[in-house]
Length: 65
Image (cartoon, rainbow, N blue to C red; front, side):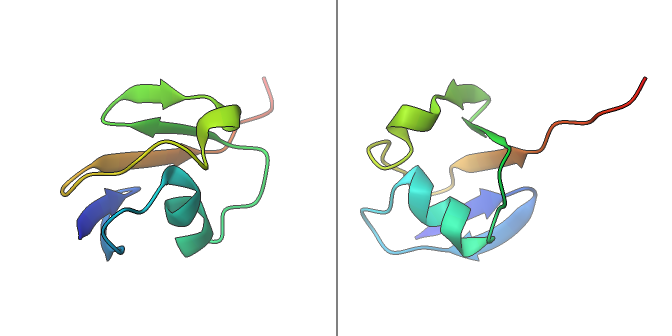
């Protein structure tokens, strides 16, 4: 299925979860995840199902001032 991860079109298997998208882009902690602009808690990454054309943002914190 087609999803968009950080504005890049990707293909994942039907039935994929947020954790699959994270693994696909090899994200390194710390980060936060939103699917279709909705925050997904870390405890739900392995459970949260993805759908065709979902927009996934994996965001790393920015430090400094």
